[in-house]
Image 1: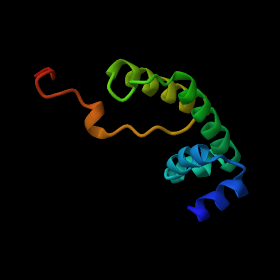
Image 2: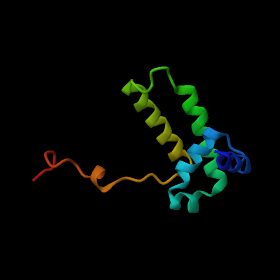
Image 3: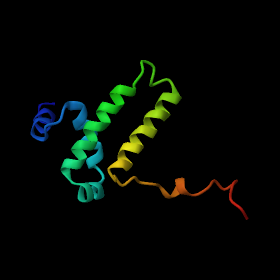
Image 4: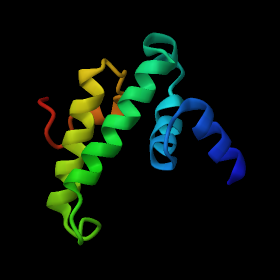
Length: 99
């Protein structure tokens, strides 16, 4: 925990911002393309946005979760963060494919 605090202080990020930063930093291509400063900016904006849009029962309500997912994706696209799309997701289900 102390190590995380030191990293947060070094990067000038709060604990929550550091958690988002770490999640964003996992994508190596994002680090290479966007750089450290942009990832910090994205992390700060994500924390502010999520805080402003949370409700008491957000873990139970699918509509709130869906809204948060949309907001997060918008922020990531705004900064050009490379979103991964899995091959499976791009393909239509077998029952919808035309023969």
